[in-house]
Image (cartoon, rainbow, N blue to C red):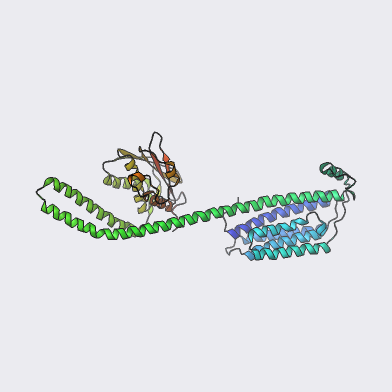
Amino acid sequence: MFPPLHSAALQLHRLALLRWFLVVGQLIVIFVSVYGLRVALPLEGMIAVCLLLGAVNAATHWRQQLSFPVTSGELFAQICIDMVALAVLLYFSGGSANPFVSLLLLPLTIAATMLSGIWVGALALLTFAAYSLLLRWNLPLPPSLASLQGLDALVSAVTGVDRVHLSHDGGFAFHLIGMWINFAVSVLIVAVFVARLAATLRERERELARARERTLRQEQILALGTLAAGAAHQLGTPLSTMAVLVRDLELDHAASAPLNQDLALLREQVDRCKAILKQLVADAADADAGSPLTAAALLARVADEWRLLRPACTLSVRMQAGPSPRVFAARTLDQALLNLLDNAADASPAGIEIDASWDARECRIDILDRGPGIDRSVAERIGEPFVSTKREAGGMGLGLFLTNATVENLGGRVELFARAGGGARTRVVLPCAGGGEGRRAP
């Protein structure tokens, strides 16, 4: 598998690997022709070309360790070296009459998948010029000194061509076999190289789509944050007015015990709203100030706060035995977990559960309820804005959206499952500090 390199560097890496394959293949064909078929090729010159390609590849591998980026011009120069080397080898072995002459198209094919139109056009001209020169200037391919009568018989049996047409003592049969080998090599290179390059391009398109989705989600979160900040600012004045009016009503109706109880409850709720707004401002000031915290400490903190908010709904917390791992716990994560607990309590007012487990890489926090369960369409669209598990009860669909965004920003994910026996299981998966991908870069 290829390493996760930058696009141009990855292309250079693949080009070097392909060149090693071609060098080895060329050496095999040369030695089989010279020592097996006894064709008197200029062995020294052809071996020198292969050694030169090997030296270029060694220099390419050394260059890949350097920090400066790979450019289109560098890729073009690398492919030109391959094309010229092939042209020289063909010059030594019959020129355009060589059955392997179509290999000149491979560098052009590779360039078309890597480079822009101007570079491909320049290489096309060079390739055409090389082929045209090979028509006139080349060393004729010497005849084989080996007996090729058996080769004639084999080709006749396989192709059905009458042996009368396989003239020149196996020369035509030799040419047909060379063309077959050339075609097989071309198919292999195109299938392996171009198919893998296409797979890389498809993966890049998918990554771009995911990046666009993340950008859109961040824009939606920013819009919601701006609206929330404006609402918090505007709610301060009416809450202060309500607090003053409630206090006046308490003084005016001090003799009415039942009314005083209701007014006291109302004052507590107003004070609670003011405290939430103050906490919202404080949390926003250091929303990114998350630090590693043990899962046990995080759940204890969230459970204590939630029990104060929803004392009528029982909450039981179970954790895997042994020391709990550390996770990245920004203050926004507390609110995300509280949102999920609220959803579960609304579906199952009698009681809900938290079940935490972990391994070396991630911590799983399951929130379980015995409500009506999760609709599959909602589970598949988790993380989209305005998708609510409580639409009939007036839910706006922002809780799951913000929760999912918060957890994803910490490198985790939120999943929804149907619970055996009825109800829902909402799972928050967080990377362990130092054991997973960790928090995303801002």
